[in-house]
Amino acid sequence: MKLVTFNSRAGAVVGGGVVDLTGRMRVRSIRQLLEEGRLAEAAALTPADFALDEVKLDLPVPDPAKIFCVGVNYVDRNAEYKDASEAPKYPSLFMRTPLSFVPQGEAQVIPRE
Image (tube, rainbow, N blue to C red):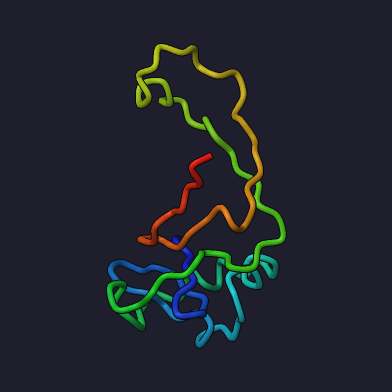
């Protein structure tokens, strides 16, 4: 399931559309949905309320508490990167800040430094 925040509302992408979880489940945000463990309930909602191309996507979780990322976490990483490096023994873990993310389709500003 792909979770999205759109037009300041929580949603789930279903096919080519978006289910409005804020309206159907009375949640304020994706973060609330995750904290309450209501993903199975959200997955059961299948009819889309909006076409995906008619909503403006925001950051998926606009109010994160912490952001931990996992990198190099799949077996075929070396085949994809073709950089002749050895397969990693463990995935890499790293943190990100909320300001390092942008909504899908928006420009990422990269400082010259």
